[in-house]
Amino acid sequence: MHPKLPNKPALRAAGLVLSGALLLPGSFVRADVASTVHNLLPAESGDVENSGPVGLCPVCHAPKGLGQTTALWSPKTPTTVYDLPGTATSEAAPGRPTGASRACLSCHDGTVALAVLPALGPDPNGALVLESDLSDDHPLSFVFAEAHAGPARELRAPATLEGPVKLDAAGQVQCTSCHDPHKDQFPDFLVMSNEKSALCVTCHELGHWQSSSHGSSDAVWSGRGDDPWPETGLKTVEANGCRSCHDPHAAAHPTRLLARASEQKLCLACHSGEVAPAVLQAQSEGGSVHPGLHVGSENLERPVSCGDCHDPHAGSVVPDATAADALCSQCHARKRLFEALPSLHAKHVEGAGAACAACHAPHRSESSTHLIHFMRVDAAGAEVARPLESGGRLEFVDLGESRGECYLSCHGVAHEPARYGEAHVGDGE
Image (spheres, rainbow, N blue to C red):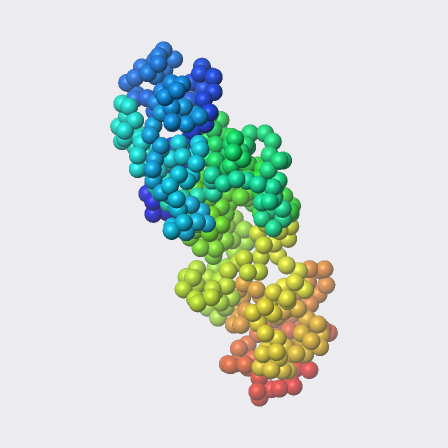
């Protein structure tokens, strides 16, 4: 749970939204706002429709000529200096964020407004409190320019923004680009549904997202363990889309707005067997897990992260054998492997062109050390290894440092066993 949001589900229920937009025609807006948590009138105020000039709208908006902004904003806008995404604290400056977002923060930074608004008690409805640290929130009050568009930043051209997602008059992204404070037709006062990432992909263009497993999977949560999607109300990986991994406000890990405190914990929220196959889990007796991929490996000097090998936005999250070998070689130097075990790695990798995955699992091996896990069938459906006809063994036996025995049939040869190590160089031909 984020330290500055002690009751995050309650805050979401209250509307994870930053308000402040141009005033719309009175009767239409008043009817919409009256039924939302942005109706800040005291409960005993009586009839909203007949509350007159001191009623619903003046809680937030001043009569023409008296407001501080173009939205006729009534509360005093904050003078707080905010920490913004990607901005060092020393670079933060008064006056940012700007525009509608500044007005929103007059309530939602938790330092100024709700307790001083007319006739209101402190913090009604458990309203969202962002405080002055906005570094874990979606960037705002920046000019979304044509220069930002393109595959490098995976953003659409701002000229293509049509429909409910809009920039302000200065061409800036503001709270009101994604939220409409007057209408809660969609959760969190969003301007449109974000099911299947519809809102996110209005601006963010990911080349293969729609065909990727994360963008199209109909997998659901098993109901065991922690709910990976406690705030969206959506049931499948596809429906949750970007929200499976990212949180636009108060993200647990500000870098890339990750919804969990580390990349390992983020992936394990689903890849624990409760949504997706359990590619990672606690090491079993006699088994092995790729160093750095278990929870707690954040303490390693250079922990391996899932993103080092996988692109969660790609059409195929799992690389093919050739690409996988290239990934392995970025960390596991072939020269060192060939020198350490000349009778095995050089023979199989260079001599026979075998992929690393023919003998090693990338994530874990349930029963063998060194991630040994013999591939039965490759991606094309061709047989790679099978159990021995006599005894049915398909097994690796660890005999100590750089020594072992392999029991299997592969490349047309039955190894009963194939031995390797200093005492067995040349065995298993």
